[in-house]
Image 1 (cartoon, one colour):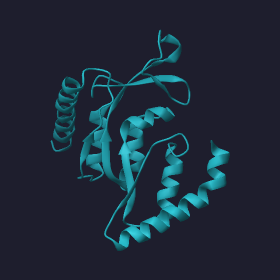
Image 2 (tube, helix red, strand yellow; image 1 turned 90 degrees about the vertical axis):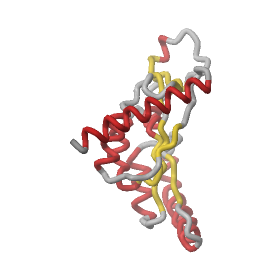
Image 3 (cartoon, helix red, strand yellow; image 1 turned 135 degrees about the horizontal axis):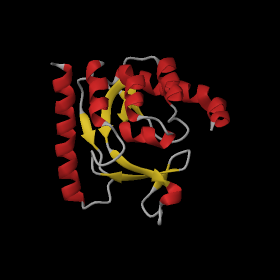
Amino acid sequence: NLPLYNTHKDTFVDIAREVAYYAGEKGIECIYEDQGYLMNPPERMCELLHEVNLPNTGICLDVGNALFYDQKPETYAGIFASYVKHVHIKDYLKKSIDLLPSRNGWSSSISGEGLRGTVIGHGAVNFEKIFSVLLLAGYDGYFSLEYEGKEEVLSGVKESLENMKYFYERANKKINS
């Protein structure tokens, strides 16, 4: 919603800067997640981070959330690489909403694509590319597994963690060889 964003952008920036100044005095970092249709477009989040322009302000990159705005997660990773302070790793199945017999458990992107959480590596996100982009940009922080799959939780998380490590190691090996 561009008109809504444009109407309130200066307020977002002023509040984020004020919070960051205060947090900085306490040794706290402020990180914003790429989430929600208002702030999900990368140009809006980058504009916020650029205008706040404080070293304790950055992004918690949620690679799966890029799909809600019909963006490639690896492109998001590249756009935000200089701002990344933390990364959420999650995956989504992606399917035309018109082809779903039931929308139970499915969300929708802005263009109407059906998205449903799944085991890391089973969905539409290219994790090897994402890890490569972030590692090449010098990111050396943490990656958190965020599991939203409909599969049984313990086995889904276990397989997701194994797959996450697999993709990270492949990216790291390619970069360092």
